[in-house]
Every structure is written in C-alpha cells, then in structure tokens.
Image (tube, rainbow, N blue to C red; front, side):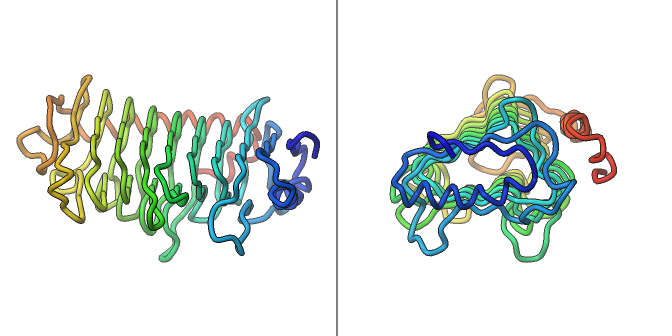
Length: 309
C-alpha cells in the first residue's frame, strides 16, 4: 500500500484489502483507494463471500473515505458481496454477480456514491435485508447518489435498494439517476427510512414480484420524479408507514414522468402531470438494460456466460 492506495491484480490480492483498510484506519489516514483490475475476480480461485471493510468492534463508521474503482474497465466480483463502514464510500465500475443476497452494504456518516454498478443474480434468502443496502449512521444528514446502476435477476427479503438510518441520522439527499431495477422477490424496490430530498431522474423501475414499488417510513420533505418510467399496480406504487402532518410534501411528477397507472388512480401523495405507459413497455426497457449489463459482464470474462440467466 502506497499513499493510501491498494492495487488488486488477482484473486489472492483481495485477501489483503481488509487488512489495508484496518491498517489505514488505525494509522488515522483520511482516505483509502482500492483499484480493481478489469475482468473477473472469483472465477479462478475462491474469494471471500463477503469482502468486509468494517471494524465490527466500532460503534460507528470509521473516519475514512473509501473508494473502490476499476479505472481500466469493468471489474466483476463473482460470488461475493461488499460491506463497508466509512465516513464516505464510492464504488465505480464494479459488477457483482452470483453472490450473497446483500451485494452492497455501505454504512456511512457523510455519503455514498454508486457510479456504474451492476448487480446480477444475487438471490434472496428469508432473512437478509436489501440487495443494495445503504445506512446513514453519522448522527447527521448523509448524501446518497446512485448513477448508472442496474439490478437484474435478483431479489431481496426486504428491498432491492434500501436507504436506512441509525438513530439520530437521516438522508439529506437520495438521488437516483439512470437506475434500472425490478425484483424476483421482496417487499419493495426502493425502501427509505427518512430522507429530506428524494430525486429520481431517468429511472426505469418495476415492482415485479415485490409488494411495493416505493416504501417510506415517513414521507420526504421534498420529492421529485423526473423523466422516469415506473411500473406497479395502483395500490403498490408507494406507501408511507407513519404519516407525519408536518411533512405533507407530495411526490412531484415532472419532465415527462410515465406511470402504468392513470393519474386519477394513484394513491394520495402524488402531484403533477404524468404520461401513462404500459407495464410491458417498462419491463422491456429494464430487460434491455439488464441484457446490456450482462453483455458487459460476459465481455469482461466469457466464462461468466455460464453463471448468468
């Protein structure tokens, strides 16, 4: 490790990433960058089923910024999930294939960014939470941004994307842009504990086999769904578990948002004009996004074609 950077070249190097994280935290370093190679890790040799960059004895996320990135082309982690607890977490150019129910588990104080992240064939069990699990735990508002994220052939005991909060923490902003996802099982596609500002732009989301498209513990302070295609039954579009009269903000539909339910049949809490779109059209768009993601994964290593639907 030099200058807070770890370079992974092959499967065996992954075993040292956790040690590098713990060493960086112990040394008081402000940043750890893990650079991953193009291609697949986990096909030639076994890698940890959960790559854990967290100190289980700590009472909160470590005071360090952690980045995992694949600068030279898509890196596919086969049969593995990732758990990180840090001040901030950033993932770039990574695909998770055929691993445990929770593919990404990020506990942060300040923020998390998922940029060009794919999850394929992570199947649910009866107890594990969300396929992508984000937790705000810094005693303040955190920021979450998901951009160019695809989840396919996956399900969850709870949600496909979960944004949860420890006591005293909340999400100041949760922004999804160009996110495509559906579920083979689960309670929700997007589950949120507490968020001040919720923004969806150019997303394609379908409830699939999940009970609800968007489940919120409390309503957001403000919310905007822009230029997105959303598919669910009228009763399954959105639910708020605890009504709060102080947070009556509607989910504003703008910029050509398209829903599979006519505006007059939407549950309370939606505002604005939306186009109507067939569920089959949204399903086809998500399927096309998943197919493109699959092609990228197989291009990274042709052997992965045998592991994917």
